[in-house]
Length: 599
Image (cartoon, rainbow, N blue to C red):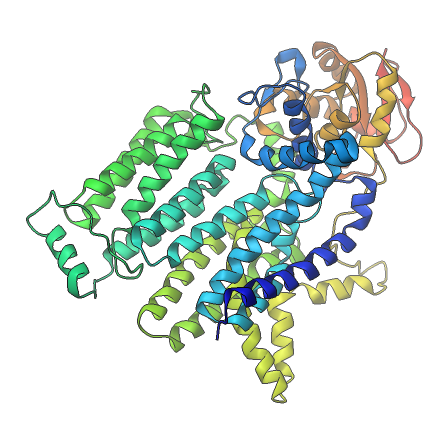
């Protein structure tokens, strides 16, 4: 049985406290060192400092990236900056500037985790009961893709995307079609305003709405009569207030309306004045598509398939007519050099078959077990409950499909998997208590499929049989801290590998030529080209971009990639200690950050 609401929050609070404690302990080293999980987190802090330092709300340009060419207008959203700013401003009088920033970098991800955990537990509570609600919190915390995106110091937008996706799932459970459609549409609109990466998931929810529309009605009484009247001769009749989410076909119309209205509101609140047809952020072309879909689905009274065809064809015509450049995708501004030596090296943005075995298994296997659990729940259910699990299977399968193509999306699939996995783990625990310990192996296989690889990597191996890599090497570079030596020198622009650019911006007053953010494609090309060119050719690029300093971390992967690409290039020479005459050392000892001044 579910119990009362106090029992619900007691269970969630207990699980949440345990998970937060474990996350703080396992990330204690990185927290103490001020080490970010990802360069995007460092640049998010730069953006926060710029905003709190007086940069305009609508101005998300990074003026210290490629300053000789006007900076880089980022595709990021201020929505993610708001909770960080709120915590930092409230705690600044108590902790000082740096202390308040650190508090924000700890508090905000844990608040995000609390939101996601409550939403996951609510689904389990409503559908499976109290015990499953507790287990769902724990299975969520066992998901490697989820805790990769929601953990201390992880302040970029991916955690909030998971929260938006889970909120959209609540709209599928709501018994009132209008309210449910608006919850899901509004949640995904906010998620899209944070990052357009949520567009495939939005399409999955739209496909489910279409399935609901096409599914035969089984309702009776006044609701059924209203639907029949709407399908009949009275084409001007308003939408009926259908109460049951499993029985109304008009959830999709409300969903599309909410998506359009809330997207317009978010655009007005955060991007007003930016009328360019961007391919990597919600732009006027996307708003036009959403409005078109909402109007057609609200007004259409003919055959459903024809209405869907008109909606889709019109949306595509708007997209390719108003933004033909977007046919090449969100990263269409990257030239072949940047595509090959940067984009194709960013593992989280690549499909699962481009990952190491541990990452691929943790991304794909738990959702597959969750789909297996959904099949079992469908078999055991009937009526509306059976329909619900059928819909859940469609949503989870769609999220897994997106994750297979873009590994970073595995966090959403991992969160969706938590509920059916909680039921499956509960069933296997019962079997284990009945004397069938093999069920415990099933739990390990479902929750920690990479365990054999991890264990294999922990034992000694001969040189001919290297252990598989399971995690990134922790760098000794500390670029953020060592960059402070630049503050004692004339201010200038630094040529550095893309991944340490944000740390250099945080640790110094200087600018950088480029970071790993695709809108700065011009500077990215020149930075990569300089590192893979012979020193004389690199000097020409350096002079053209008014570079004052060159920096790199020798123990990071990016300069190693450049050295392998061009054994006689600038990066390879600097790593080997062959410094060209036009550079003078500023800080060039040990394995930490090395800096040279351009003579």
